[in-house]
Amino acid sequence: MSDFNSSLKIAATGLHAQTARMRVIAENLANVDSAGKTPDEDPYRRRIPTFKTEFDAQAGGNIVEVGKLAYDMSDFTTRFEPGHPAADPQGYVKYPNINPLIESMDMREAQRTYEANLNVVTVTRQMLGRTLDILRS
Image (cartoon, rainbow, N blue to C red; front, side, top):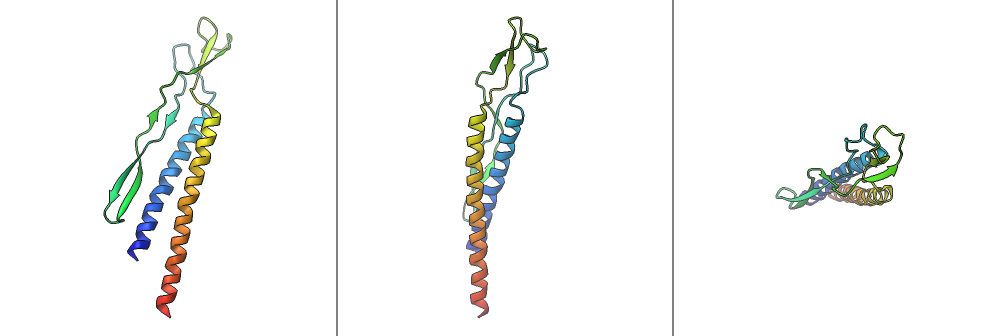
């Protein structure tokens, strides 16, 4: 029984981590066009979720935990929009350093990893149910 519980615990931490990852990606995508209000104000900066593994003696294996959010320090993109309130003297506005294609691919990867962990939970529950059926016979 403890092997089943260990599998469930490890998969559950993976589910939690990928849920947090998808939340950060969704926030990035929601702010892709969020420019600052003034020329001196920086726009939204892309956030990157971090993860760390930790040995869990009770589970008998490594579990994943969500770490601190990191910030992508790459340059902001600029667009020529001279009428915008955040335009600099040359007419350029700074926009977030977010590439929607990269965010979409990260989201797809997070979804697939989430599904893999969910499959572990499903199969473990099925195996536990079959084990209990055998013990009842």
